[in-house]
Length: 104
Image (cartoon, rainbow, N blue to C red; front, top):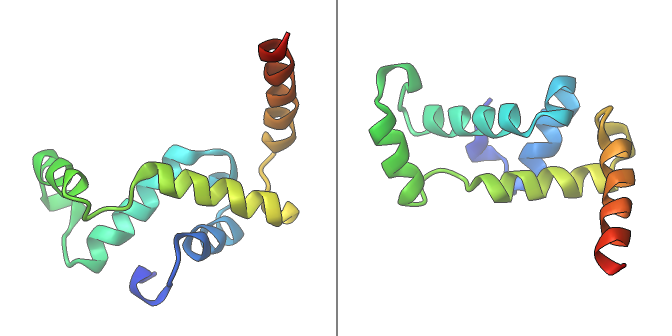
């Protein structure tokens, strides 16, 4: 898959969640897959490069920020109930409990 044809992170995340059920509950898998596709789109083979190069690229903004990816995942799952993972409802119930405890 080439990410250069997809315009927004929302669209990228939505496509991946549609095609990979296991990514719906696993942000680390989702983020790493997007980073891998990004490197390949830049003609960089992840298996042949160092962690130092990866970290420099991340620092320099050449790779998508993990927060942007996970924010897009949350928005996709908010709008598309069929793309929610098995833990979505559990996370939202817990969020309500946390909000009540903070207010108290």
